[in-house]
Image (tube, rainbow over all chains, first blue to last red; front, side, top):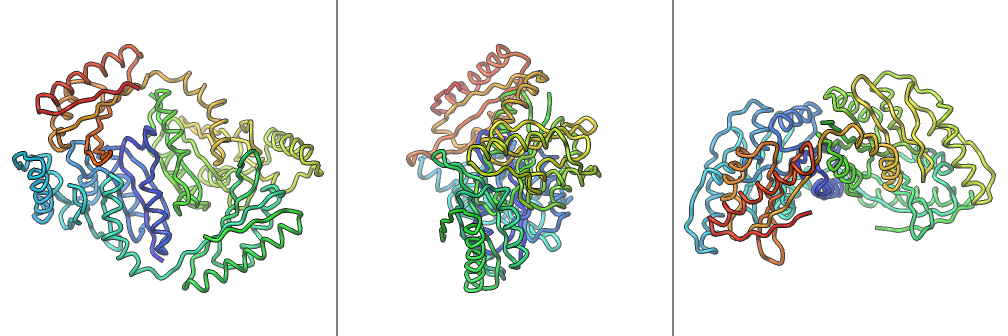
Length: 269
Length: 269
């Protein structure tokens, strides 16, 4: 089973200007593809912080590190330099990346009817850590970047959500799907009339009885009515096996909850 | 200026079930209160991961660490044990916390007309690392927790957003406001007709010319029309000084953008 750490870079996340929806998107997709996200880290647009976070992450030896943000043309887009510093790699102009950037701005110049110019800010997007490879950005100017270090592959993606998603779906998702040896599946139960603290021992019993499953309870209040959402998840070798485990666990939990006078609603996803 | 690391605990964040809106809320509020969030970390419901993240965070010596999640009654609510393990602190039944939990369930039992019972799952919420103090949860069952370690104060808050916010606003925000020696202020400019790569040198100039300001550019597409959002932020000793710096920077940027043929719209917040 492959593991992934997500490293989100950007002051806008640390000042709460936006929620980290990029990390959520990646976490969801990686899980669906059978992988396990083991950590999400957010740091600001700061060279030392980025380098430190990359070094720490590499030390935990995930299969992949996916970074978002900090690939653009401005002075505070410093993800690649941070990766370079973490790995003690020289920063070099990558000819293939430069070609990608050039093509993009040639199109933009034609569209806007302004002269084409390869400014330092634009060239900057093609300066990568040595041995890194650019990944074509189908809808934006900054290429993505791939760099393999020992057993970990680092992918650096732009922070603009549409560009991040485009590169992930076109380039990375097919690679993850190919190496994945697990299927993720999930089911929801909604419980009324039994407080979370009374469900606690039931969940523990279920997880002791069935292997490779995880049951998490989330207290919810909707229209003033409290209920508990149970989220049952499993990673399995096949879709059939996953669904059969989920059905068995759901039946077990439904029975236990009803025995304690609770109401249960099931929702397949 | 005080610094804060946010440690979000919960598998639901690592599988992308939800966005980390708790971290966004805290980051926004801490920034408004004049503090600086230096890192956000997300780990799963795993004792070793939590302990490791707490240890690492303490090593960076922030003024505060705020954790969210993992305070409830189920077996996988293990934030406090994780903090205890990180600090090599014994876990002990805290009488004041137990009184808080008991009061809560007595009310719930009366309301629902069911017998009151202090089950192991409920008592668990009152078992804190030695020397930790409980914080009253005004709307939920699991108390928050405060623990001072050297120059860092750890606050552990529940993951249920309404409970997290209630404890933060009632108990923590007043403390942060009191110690804060900075005012945060911000302004937005919306630019059309100048690509981000051409703005890059202007932003760098502005940040060289004015101290204590930060200008970040965010490319946006709305209704098919590309524009750049410039977010100007500052931390200052007074509201007046902050607003006067922002006005000066905004004027500087507007002039520079217009000289390059761009359109500028200003938005005060």
